[in-house]
Length: 439
Image (cartoon, rainbow, N blue to C red; front, top):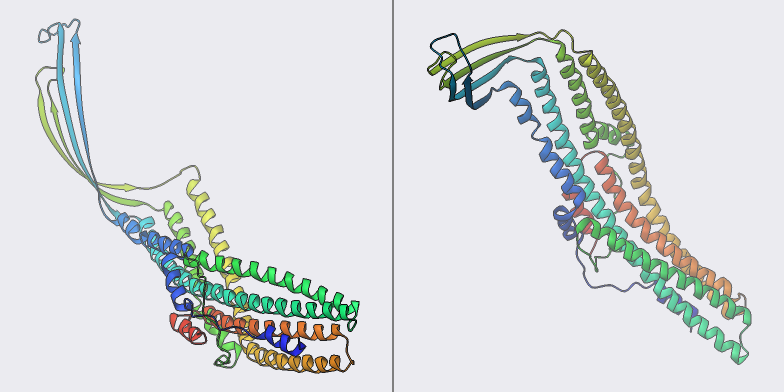
């Protein structure tokens, strides 16, 4: 078999039938991704913080009811109104209490804290949505890359297998050498190994996408050969960094976490301040009898303004306040850590997107150069200038160049999205643009 012919066969990727689109995979992820659903549940739980804090300003009302059965036995008495013997009588007691806070500094601080908690939850949920979009796209692109690798590996293994058969036939006819046969056999074994590894990686890539979407996607789209390679706009990294430090959703959530920690310090410190409450009670007592004979039915209503001044609680208030101070300091350091990480990711994503354009173009030229090198060495082999091994090396290098070229295009698309995520602007419209590069 002509070596150029089998090398080209190894590089031709069949066009598969249309599979489930990236947008369809994203729709499945929105419905089924456990990580995103956890974030949604957490956000809904955190949204209750304001209602809980508002309760500190509203009255608490309770009703206490007691029913007592009294058995009284008079053994002896100097009071002639009491006769010896046993008497049984019931007592019923109802108390309605209303406690209306007038001034509670801890409730005021908790309400301000709750606002920050809700904002933090909102930013965290938006960040989780962006993360789900990015993870879905990344997993989908990994499936596409793994599919390409398996297709190329299978084609290479088949082509090298035919070369191996040809080398064996030439050896039997006396026109070939044992060295050529060993070289072809070694490359065939290596191609088999790459195909096995590629098949395993494809299965794992599909499971990785299934982990997000909840459904196994057997057939996906393919990347177009030509799609726009756009450089970041503005074409300078500093505006992107400034936007990220201002708009990144995780960073915004972290700022709200610092505010929550600060309000916790204020709330615990409020334990040193007095509180004022208005207490209203209404009591009705119906006693069937008394020690002095006869029953009674009484109603009592009290209206009390209660001032509570904390003086000493064993140092508890000071201890919990100091704990809150340390946690506030911890949250500030976590904010700084997040800020630095976001700046690094933004710069890396910008550089990767910018250089990705040049890299894709360079690797595409590399494929063309490797193709020419293979053709030249093939002709040299026919004229006796080259043995079979250099030709096999050139074919292997061409396959690797093709794989690297394909991977660079997937990396470029992913880095475009990661840059948008870093600046907090990643949206479904960006996914639509990525989807336009697929068919």
